[in-house]
Length: 379
Image (cartoon, rainbow, N blue to C red):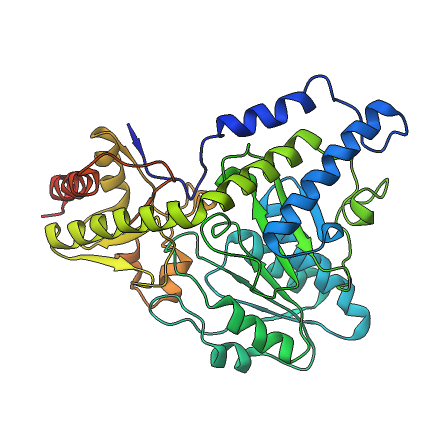
């Protein structure tokens, strides 16, 4: 089986399992406990925090460990906006192609806190221009939030340029880097808050972090004993934090080599599919995209039928975001890019991991895709 759904989740790396093992066994203490067992756990937690902060270009105290990317995004969007209401800021700018955890957080604020939501227009590739973002800002904007790289089509935003627009207007910026962590540099985008998730990097599911600069007011979502500097109460998952920091360190150390290698293989695969499948169209930006993401529409087919045929032939992929699994609605990302609903429902996403592929694999895979599409094409 060839697994090509790494944007949904990746396997846990052996090095990560070994790094977290001691904190599931011998060093099991509660990091809030004031004895040697608890202090050993607290030391590991702070080391993990410093390692994550270093990769994200933040201070150690900025990092809040969470139970994944969804919680990190919820904490960023709800936490920053709720903390801004007392200052009369009741407006948030959310890109229309965001992950459901951001869109639903904004919808919650709109329903229950009378917050207004605006979305900058994206072009056909899913890109946001600085001009489009500037046009969406208001005097009462509390937050701008956007994804560094889209989880469905792989388009990479010019995060530094977009952040500069918002911060020039005195507005905090949150960047969802769940997909880009480990593939793109994150330490120079200048955001006030950055979300990551461990299971995209080779750490277990249920691990993540939000790095939010200390000067940004943040209303916690979880109240209790005041852990994580009062921003996320609850006994910390020390083993999970160690796993996340180890996976992030490994991915960052390998980033330049793996990104170049995976990008080259993905481009060969894209070229092969477009040459072999009549009517196939690449979605997302043709150049400014994640190294391992290739998303297509196959007009005249059903995306789900293509997926089933590919799996029958030993290839596992997806039709888009795993967080929208089970929905038969066309992707909101593709609709925002101007793709017709009936075409959007033919989409298939292939996302490669960091492991090397055998010689000729991209071309062989493209041939398998072509055969699968032919097998299920509508008459």
